[in-house]
Image (cartoon, rainbow, N blue to C red):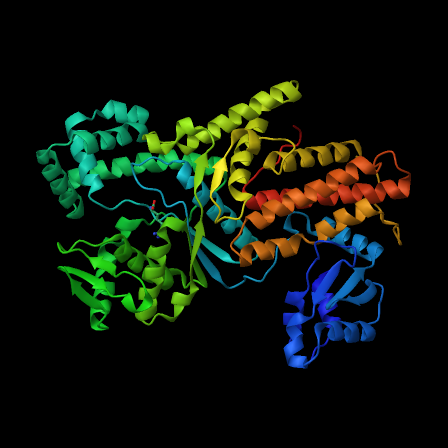
Length: 560
Ligand code: ARG
């Protein structure tokens, strides 16, 4: 049952649509006064009355029923108590029926969302800085799909630019096919780094020539380029598999080579291009921004030019409802400029473009900092977490079957959860010990809660889950049930705010409430009717927690 809607339908405020009332109804942090509350402050102006008076008047006309057991007013809030037995029955039955679909919805049907995320650079390290975009984008992908949207995951590859000429030049001078075949992206990256420190004037000129050859479709140059690209993708795809993310398109910057001219022509036609020191720019001074560079003085295109072409292409190809860019906040200006230029071009869909910005990730272990020129490869971070997880399992549960598999789920889950738990715009310091803690607000803690619930369920095979007609609901049970009932709202909130952390926090909250229930209430040894009810709560928690974690890309081991 959708309680917010149920409550909203009972309230009428002159001039306020029911949907607005529904969106104002919230679960108060402190439930002493009620399980749901409607703040009446927003209505004061329209009704020309104080919020306190409004809440009191509304409370007087709404009568309790078998869903709402109590209505009261306090300090401008209208408070509702939900009938505990009714909430327990309806929530548990719903979760049992919907199973893996619990929390999903159809609100996105007929709408397409493009998500540009991870967007790696060819032949460059896939490093810790790519963690957030990859897992935030991956989670948003799953969340929107769960809500019924058609989602297009796009890896806007960084595969365009003079650096590829440099790479070819370096390979010709110092490279060795066998080594590149064996060590793949690491060997290629070393060549590139070496070029940047050792290249002579001659090599620089040669690199420019190779870049020109790639651009002009020269076969040999393109074969090399495609090789570097293939081995980069092979490498990153392995990591994507482990993180549980996927893409529907790998159209990178290079894909737009022949798609920029129409945009440039349109900019010209609409009088938006201006010359500045030989370059072509869109002046954005009126909007308090530096000019957006479209063509360099030598006629070369820029990052923004390719992003403009990509935006046109995505609108034409997918007719998106929203187009998201999960990119670090360092590129705030780039996206502000991009969206503004689209607006100036008269594209009404410019309003549907969203920069989903996130903060930086650094490692607690300063020795591995990128500042010292040492790159922290994402794969190493994941491997280290998996190794550490394996060690912990070896200590805690040495006889566990499939230890490696469990360690993979725990280690990868720890990395993902560590990156998703905080509000995405915050900079985070990644700590191995913290993300792998069994006690903290971690993925491991949630997984462990699932394993605990699983073990109860395993011992309860064949036992009844038949709920009593009028269940007695104690405080611990009620807290779990309320949290369970809140899951669909958490999914929607995460989507509305482009914020997977809402779900990560939800998972921790549900885990904490379940653990309290588990420690304070007998389950298997309770008398039959009570046992059935508590087993049903345990089943429902397991389903819901698994659904929540899977939206983040985190798997749940049966035992750990
Ligand atoms: N490859 C870029 C980088 O590493 C990110 C691309 C983001 N997507 C975009 N459409 N600009 O900085």
